[in-house]
Structure formats: C-alpha cells, structure tokens
Length: 177
Image (cartoon, rainbow, N blue to C red):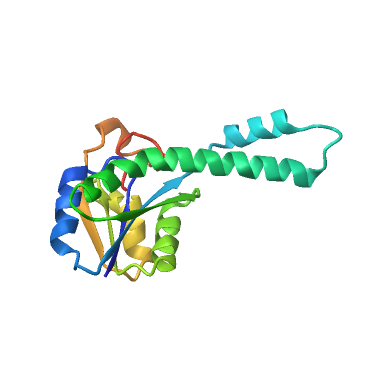
C-alpha cells in the first residue's frame, strides 16, 4: 500500500502520523506532497531583473527555471517537513514531493498516479455536505481521482474566507490539503 498525504501545512501532524501508523502495512510506503503556486508577480519580477540585452532567451529561461525550482523546493520543504518528521518519530519514513502548479487538485491527482498511490489522505476545512465543499480542493480531488480519499479534519477556515476562493496551497492559511 502506498499512501499519498497532500498538505498545505495545516494538517494536524500528530493525529495524521498516528492514523498512518495504524493503517500502513509493514511493507507500505508514504509520500507527502504539497503543491506550490508560484506567484505571477514573482515570475514577472524574475523576468524584469534577469533580462539582459546580450543574453539569449534560453539562458534567461534556464535561470528562471532554476529560481522557480528553488522557490518551490524551499516553500514545499517548509510545508511537508512537519508531517515527515511526525511520521519519522513513529518509525515511518516518508518521501517529500514538491509540485509546482495552479490547479492543486489536478496536481494532487497526477502525483497520486505517478507514485502509484493506493489512497490519498488530505485535510478538510469546509463542511463536507455544504454545496461549497464541492469547490474545495478535497472535493475536486474526490471528483477527479479514482482512488479512495481519506479526509482528516483540519483547522476550520475563518467565516470571511469560507465563501472566497481557496488560498494558495503553499500558504500557511488553512486550506483543503
């Protein structure tokens, strides 16, 4: 069994690690993924600062790619490490995965396929039976993936955020993963 844990940094680490310890068979694997949306302003800033009239486009694109990869890894590591550490403290080694993307649900589903996951575990910060829950990341993953989805209650979202668009998955604000 391979369990993919999708997080935005708000999953309760100890309860998740305890649950994984209970359900993971001895030969099982765990991967922890977070999806980072690189802010458009960041890319615009890179483009304006890295433009040099005597360098070719391939050099600029390569520099931009390296900086974006570094941003995604640094941000991703901060969000994944608490769960990885909690799992390790229970004797479970987990693989951290950092994915760049703006469609977080699609990125989670694609990552689950790539690692050949058998189960996706993620947070739920909205009421599951409200109409708006289907717009949440966990609701979208439920609709798009053929895999079982286990939702763990995360920190509830403040009332004024519940009707707005989900914050980026890399944000420290509560969200659905």
